[in-house]
Image (cartoon, rainbow, N blue to C red; front, side, top):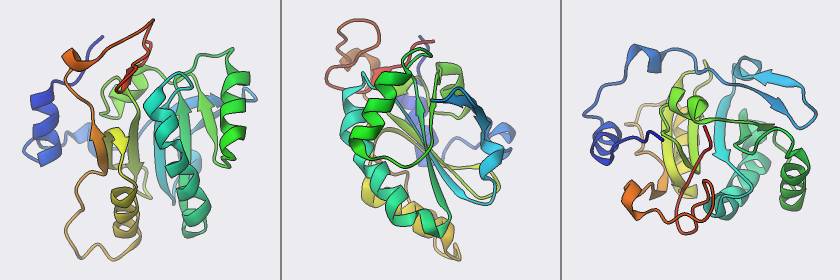
Length: 199
């Protein structure tokens, strides 16, 4: 599976790699919810959208998911919308549903996210990964790796504010390590780091 090279990722995050024209257009993602109804991001224009790519089999995803539950509960009234984009395959709706109910998550959960979906948003292919969209649907920032809650809220504050201050740094708590440091057990499951998404 293709992954973003560490040097390229570092350059991109530092701002030394300029965004492409594609990065300036509205983000594209269309998936089904747990009731098999299809949705896409255009439904949420006018809101700050936080899309978290995760899976029930991804250990770091389980650890960070309460952050997104708190974000939706605490800041939904401000025009912030969290979307959980699960890499679990169609047919695994019961497991995804149990996972979300156990966390008391109230945000939309879509299922069947792929590496193509993540790469289209500039996130690489490892879970967890998060992208924040501005009100017009364009990508504001990316967090490949485990999210930093303080940094996430700092970005929300900046996007909702007058933006007179410089952009905050990407809200990455634990970045994706080089591929050589991954240890896998079974298909796509990272035991001690981000997990690769099935293609």
